[in-house]
Length: 142
Image 1 (cartoon, rainbow, N blue to C red):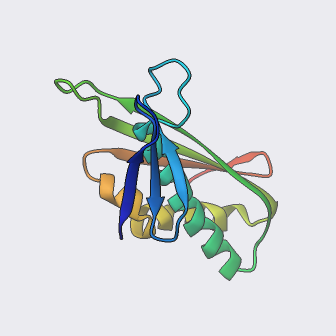
Image 2 (cartoon, rainbow, N blue to C red; image 1 turned 120 degrees about the vertical axis):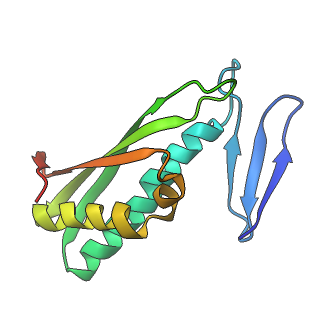
């Protein structure tokens, strides 16, 4: 895996490009007129996307019909000298469609326990939790 980072302006805007030519913009969001997401926001996005890919893949293999999928991520940071790393991350998944709620919950559990490389990279220093909502109802742990 290889990423190329290039400075775009005379401030803090960077374009990060993967080996397939796909790119995202990262910026210092504490500055006015930021044009990209912060590096820390990109980590939260990566957790949601990584586990989202897992959940959708698992549920498709189980022939569940997902008409809508989204996630919200919240994180708590802690000051350690100059840095402010994450202490905890909570991902809430919202699924709509003909989806068995327990299968959706189990797919999320498998993602975080076994498959999501991003959240596994953050362990054990960062607690990553999740909630699952199917058709407007929160699914409780099995």
